[in-house]
Image (tube, rainbow, N blue to C red):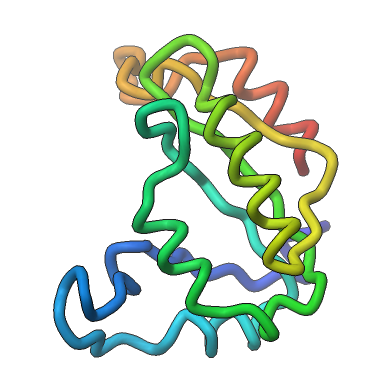
Length: 133
């Protein structure tokens, strides 16, 4: 099983915003984290038909550390298309950063809607996430 072999860490962009947007960064550098990683799963919200600038700033703080490592992209949005524009724009940017986006992507739409058990109720999202894995 994958979970027996994989070690994952949840990284938040807000912990790695560079100095000119938030002052001196006290967290481990994104470049160090990227260097020590075998690959990435990037969950990206759609912001104004693209990915957030803060994510780009963080990703741009490394380059050599990526070394053609694989990157999976999951788009999320409150709309009906699951951040598809953000995903496609980010996948192109990742290629330019020497990362290798995997062919499968996942889209989670209407992220702000949940069922009575506080679980996202999106069958299409479940299928695309399963396909991604």
